[in-house]
Length: 376
Image (cartoon, rainbow, N blue to C red; front, side, top):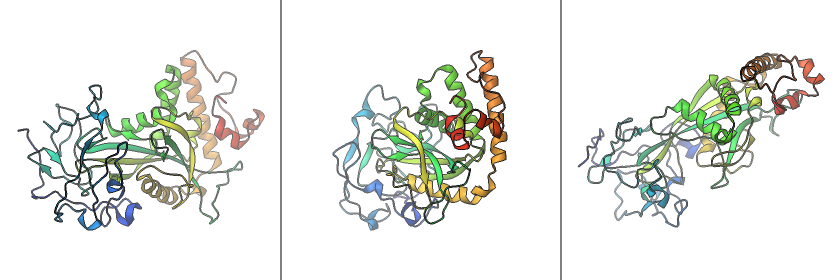
């Protein structure tokens, strides 16, 4: 039988209360997952077994609990190299990347218990009403990375926009998922052997900029823009995600980083939906109000955490227009240099340094400057 790394000595799986206030907040303790045990399993007609609140914890006896076992057909296709192929053979749980599969199975929540008879791990946040691999790629934790790119919404005079209650409006780059139609942070799963930093950049580029279908020059500029923006990242959350794709044996965990753009560096990013995104745009967010959008899974929690962080660490009145122009000039100069190095400069008809007054001479208002970028 395959070796099993199970440092938890308990005879029953560990149950960790993952969500306070039913999802609004990133602290652990006090709450229960809800989406993970509700309704029919996604992309199937398999109904979950009901799990009452008082039976979520693995340590609580639940006589007759025998949930359906489900693995999506796509997970067993030969070309699905991202999948465990519905087999737990040889998996090393609670272990980092191993030579066997290069998959990190260390949970952000806690070491999870493993059944030695099946070599399947148990969801550290409790029962879900369904077992097996589901539609996820891996047994155990499926690690994801979510980059939240934000800026304060401002009018043409650089005055911050407020909602009807006087709260400043935060904008964030959001993609609309093609599979569910929900709006989401442009993140995704960590590839085997891949570091979180690379995942954040790769997923943002693929979903929000469509880098998979860019020319070499376009991709160079896009990735340079991401790199400029990525310098001030702050981790918002690391842990379990209450997601309808979770099962008793496979679940999603994420690391969420905020990249707040106080210098309007994101104005140079050519937003275009790609990969599994249907659409991409700047969306508005105010405390407790996701602009009336249907948000994917636990992303309301991540956005609320981000809003409160940005409001405290970079309030609107701490960002000045003079700083913006100074850094816009730096960006323009760097891009012109890269274009010249490729001998195909798209900026040759515009000066490498543009002052505030010159923007007007080129037919730009301040507001238009935000949207046009260097190739407008």
